[in-house]
Image 1 (cartoon, rainbow, N blue to C red):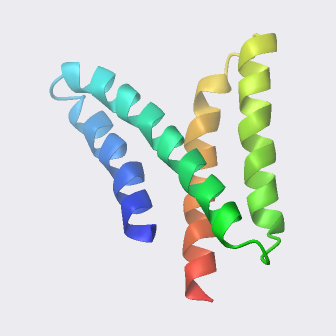
Image 2 (cartoon, helix red, strand yellow; image 1 turned 90 degrees about the vertical axis):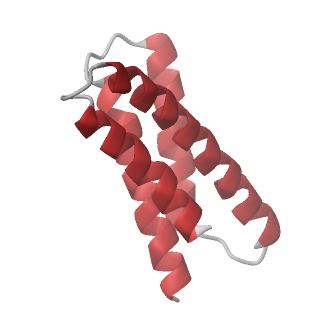
Amino acid sequence: MKKLNNFFVSFPLALGLLGFLWGELWAIAILFMMLTGLVQVLTATIWLTIDKGYKSKLLGIYWLLTISFFLMLAFTEWQWIWAMPTFIAIYYTVILNYKFKE
């Protein structure tokens, strides 16, 4: 799960950087970032389902951030909302790496 997540986080970043050379890659990077969010939500759900005895405060904060992002997206006009998914993805990656080091 850790390697899959690292791929889904680093690939849109690489496409975004290559977008400076070929502008079409930015649209693909944005779509891939959405896919990254979907994969992370699915893996977090599976993680909670499989590991029922593990009550992670860090994972709870991840869910709170994810839900607050979608609520803010729907009900506010905050102009920096586009940056939040990137930070949420990085936060989940840190949680994932921390959990598998234990």
